[in-house]
Image (cartoon, rainbow, N blue to C red; front, side, top):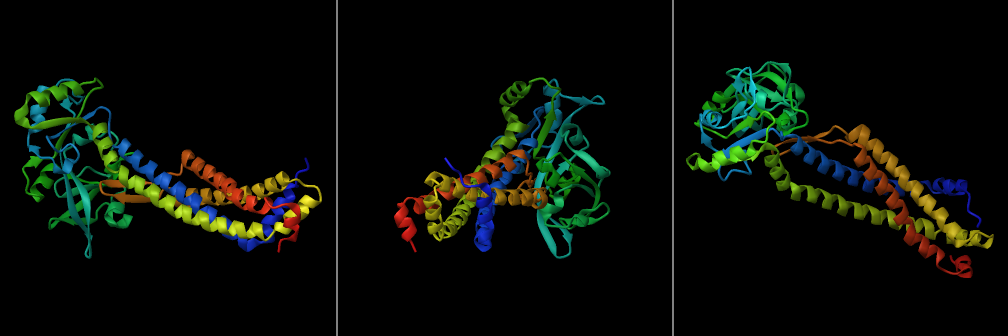
Length: 385
């Protein structure tokens, strides 16, 4: 079976440059949208998954399992927990127990700019419990000071220089100095603001904690924590593994992730149908050419294979442009959501999604136009106008 040379196929890409650009642009939009949707879903899930530590247990008030911010437990609860549980990790002979207050409040970093931030009141033990936290610059906050995550400016809609060390922000009519900047290896904590526990309790006029986070020394003591909460009903506590808490949060955001996929899919269908119409017009205008190729000895399969190569070539070219755009333009862009910030990562699975999408578009897009052009008999093809 004689096959049409590949050079003939590639030359056809440049015979009608405007149509080729339209087809490549349509495929580029579809491929890039699918890659972007996959990256958003993966990055959000990864951020929430990284936020939980397998060795940490969170004690909350009963009924607040899905929101630390709603939880209220008695101040000093960490001492009761410390006295009733064993195998708590210790640092310098002190238990790794972090009493915390989580508060959503308004932060003003500029005169005319105020935005909501997740503020965490902590003591120094928080660094023993949240082991992914690392102080990048500055020092741990003292009274009247705060420590900000490296992505907190994204969450607040500010420029990075607005939260540099030495700058001041306003919270509840109090001026607070930025004393340090920390990161937390891709967790939601990177978008938080940390301040001394007693400061936050004073500013918000509360006398209760949001939670107590405990780090154990590697043993599976979650069962002991559950027994403690169920036998001390007067404390009205519930124990959760930190990874389970963030898994619940991830499940809560599942509809949003599905909406991302649905939106990308619907826009992709529109772009694909537009590209398909353009491909129909491009192939239909060449029906006589296809008939001539059959007349000089090439089979319909050879002509179809040539058209398939042409369509796949445009699809793969759009894929290369999509990958270039993803890696060099979109990769590393951060997006805020209610409890943190996630950063797009165009890694190998995302790039593979783009390659498969581009290849599929090239193959599927060629089927219907090729059928329309090659189904008629040879005399009908040669007589077509």
